[in-house]
Length: 231
Image 1: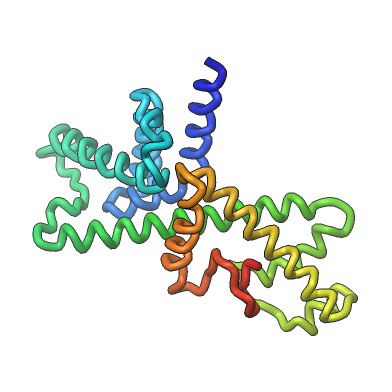
Image 2: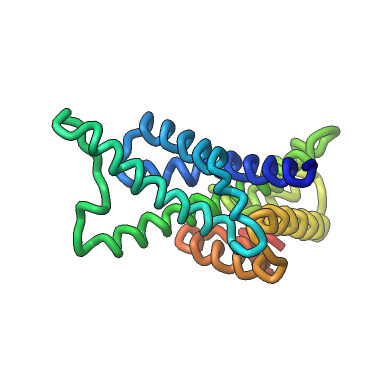
């Protein structure tokens, strides 16, 4: 009972953790902000109330793919229900079902956007974890400088400028950055480990999500060159 309850809670937390990709995917299907908020909430309640998450077990594989598949089915049903309710009411929604020959291309684009949002949330969660560990004493202000060398930073200073700001040598800065990147990558791995069903899928998922982010220069895997290396 406790094990079942704990597993359900963990999966419920995971769903809420990835609220943003779910909502953004729904928005991409033509729903406005308020509708997307409502549908995201409805979807999460649906998968929990109908024990859908119980099928997200060791046989399912990547939770990301499982959740997207469940969301697609949910949106198809929701679209049919709402069209039936609102037919003749002057309220319309954009739906990929209406695009005919472009359906496959549109679906692929929507799913790619979902995967990108998913990858960004993983990076964000890992960054929050690192920042939490650096809080206290002088760690927070120190991390504010080092943070610019991790993925997602808008601008990256030179090693010399960062070292001067932290009053340390460049070799010492590089050594600290190496440890920080290693820790960040470990947190990324832990985050991804919660979304796959087997250890060997972690690296596969990291590689895939890195490819998803490559167009914006974000990286999940180890890269020995600055500025956006995780290692």
